[in-house]
Length: 438
Image (tube, rainbow, N blue to C red; front, side, top):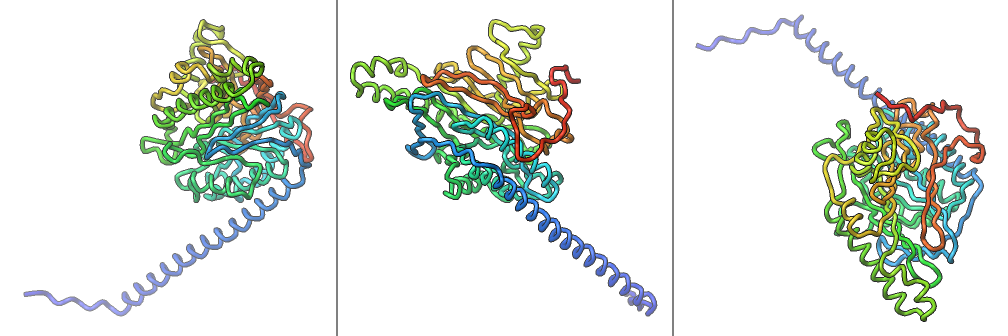
């Protein structure tokens, strides 16, 4: 026989109802507070972004002309006019674009404008991480705001540029994908941005080649950009530092690109008169090239370790050019797997220089088996805790390309007197990057 439910005393029922009403009020108060916080911080962030855009528009225009022809999606010809060219590599600008990063974003804008105004490059290549939408540092998930600030700055300066994507440009939790950010940059809103998506059957976005041509239409050097992707093996938020490598179809695209450039030169030289053909015959068998991406190849680590293990002396394979590995324990955070990109470079014999970013306190350049492996000087004020107070790593990398395609490069620190700006530079500590870090 089932027992009858005892009636709840009136007093207990009233108390229970009061507790429920109190819980609902608390929950509603929390939701209202969160909504208010979101509205306020969004408004502050929008004001900060607008302020930085206004700041960018205060810099005097540099207005460097560039004769560039879009051959196809991801393929450009740049006509040098038989003159030397200067290219500046920027990397890891890290514009947060949110309410927490307004001041540091302003510092980054100031640094970029000052360096480019002084260097007056023909072309700028950014090797990733223009935006940094990590919310606990930037105050936003919106990765388009940082991209917008940078693109507007470059448009105002009047300098042509392109980029390869970094791991932070499009985080897993960001609002916009690589494809959407590529569409934003290449929408026509920013005529000085030459970024294109590249071939659809190749992984990543922004796999591109810029061919520098002389007055005879012969390619004297190719600048190849590749998407080094982001996090893999379940590390979608990047907390385990598991970085991707170049994919097989990208390496095949690189191989095909180098072959296509060589074939194009053979056809061009064949159509020239005898004197011009003779002057350009060296570009038929091999065309020199430089490659740009964000995350370093594992060979950066191999080369640096060989140099260090030999008492910081050159070896048969490694020749030191300049710089330091300032990351903790001289860390080099390349992809966690192996790929065949470097081996393909050696096989084809075209690429003589590679430029990356990613590790902000590494700025070394070494030549490994005849191929220069170089870290660009970073701009970052935001991503590394306290890095805005340090200055030895901040700057740009200048590539001097002669009329005949020969290349040399060097690092330039931002805190030189030649880099003057409309806004004052911040005080920093010029730390020792050469000390072995433990």
